[in-house]
Length: 174
Ligand SMILES: O=C[C@H](O)[C@H](O)[C@H](O)COP(=O)(O)O
Image (cartoon, rainbow, N blue to C red; front, side, top):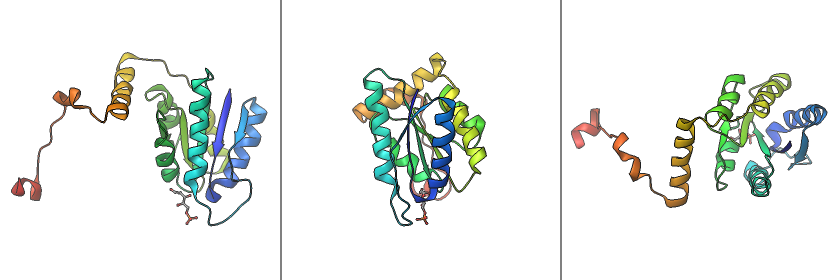
């Protein structure tokens, strides 16, 4: 399996550790940088580039996955999720990594390099990469609703499930 990985300065140590160990596991690792440490570099372009590469591979029939890293993983997840079709999940333990695949069919995992030891980060990423999406109907249905909104900007067809009730100050002003 091909794996695209990107980081910023805050995730570089983890990124290098993951590239080395995942390549030894047999994954085809594509490193989208940065290649040189710069303490003030910015995560969006690196992460977006890696996420785009995942989607390009998938459009060509490859089941590639992606890893985006930073200090928290938050901004990296946000950036990756701006790429059309990407479902990027922030994982902070093995369970959330597995659930990102099992329930959300995430193609990209985000991790915070400042939140985990390299060894722990590797185990979280291994859990993500080795878990399949079983395709349960309820999860497919929910993913389809996200994709519907992404392509149409509208989820009103599902609004029968949604209520918005004002409480507190909002109730007084309603
Ligand atoms: O969500 C963003 C990431 O955690 C970044 O890696 C982080 O904001 C970088 O922080 P700093 O520029 O203070 O090293």
